Image (cartoon, rainbow, N blue to C red):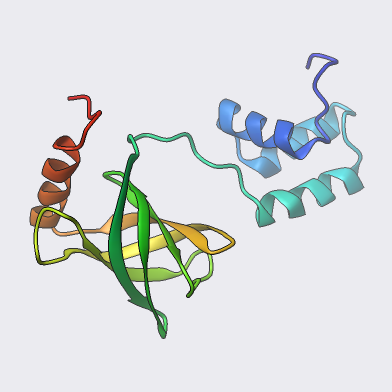
Length: 159
């Protein structure tokens, strides 16, 4: 490992986990065996990584837009604004904030149609302040196609 890299730095460690496609525990174990981390440092970093996991690289393009959304799940209901949207998820800003990992049903009121685009199940992947991101997990084929067509019609879309 180059001497310029400090494996104790959480940002560096997240980048290593992402770029080497290793599980965090395996990477920390390797670094400890090499003498670059003590056992206690490894345990502290593992706790940090569990609380703030590295983000996966984006696989789909985000499209900036503003539209209304309703969501519900786990006894929680909310209304918010979608700030950006992709084929695989969206970013929602609102007053009612679910916990990371929560399963939600999401209705997106896209400007192309009076009826909402329905996502049967999405998972909250991150929460920051009054904003959270969801990944679309279960969406009917007709709704997925409608989303694909809508995103394809947006300015800046590359076919």
